[in-house]
Image (cartoon, rainbow, N blue to C red; front, side, top):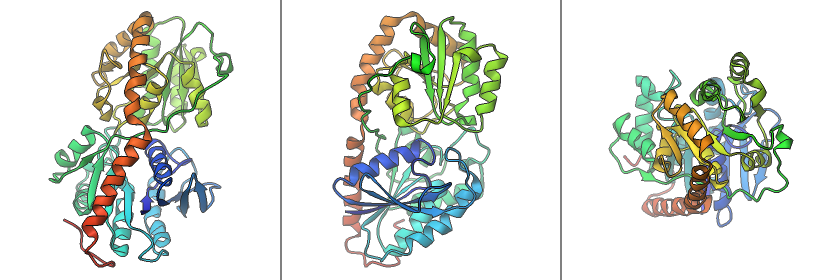
Length: 395
């Protein structure tokens, strides 16, 4: 197949959504011809290769930070991405896979109509529902109507969790089949020579790690509150990621007198991230909602128990007493109790870790890619009798 991916973000831009789409693209590029149209920022080149994937970056002008998007750059991506996509001939691709209905949805839809090929729309959670943002599409009638139209117009819609699939119907009133394909991660490579000393961690510390952009939805300042409230003398918290809340997190840790036990690594390479996971005892997060949560899978691959809230797609595979603890959203007292229990019960931590290593085998990228291949083939076959060129939406 000749596959065109459209996604506003592609590594090193952005967070988990771009990371998993890149992993999917690389996996499919082993057997197919794969091109990506994404956005360009900083000193990134306009065209590059990534593991067999041709990556084309449309300039968006307004974005300065790799980790954090802004509305002007998202708006600029649509016309600039369209101009880039129209340079191709109408027979260059067989299928388009559009990731994130906001902001990428209109671009994938327009290019699919222009090329007369199917558009498989992948929704990731935050593009439908983000409780931390007043700009969440479901809160605004014009945006909600636009999202509803694109969900109906796509040849196929894919969600990565039951939570996301449910929002298609409940928040947007779209009655159509939605494929459920759990996201996948690349199998982490073996980590050698990683040591706690390299991170400034005591050898006998109880090390908790959290990974993610420091934005409001991740509620990392609340995590600092609960870390301090647990009052575990030898506990250390490693924070991997950067973003606009970094200063607030640093300030809160200082206010509560725990800054010397909070290690803010910022944006790091995959190798550094894996090294930090390999020396940790537990993965923790106060995130208010996750469409799926790739970081949970990464932690599980390293045999870590997971402590999180119960809002989001992670509830498809995280279960209290099996994978760690899943706590009612913003029940901080219960969260602190769970922290203390994880610290006190090493046997339980090890049991959760063994279970998580086994469970994560179902969530590697090769399984995810095989499911997408099936959907792409079916969409192409349904369109086989349709002349190429401008076509009407499928519904």
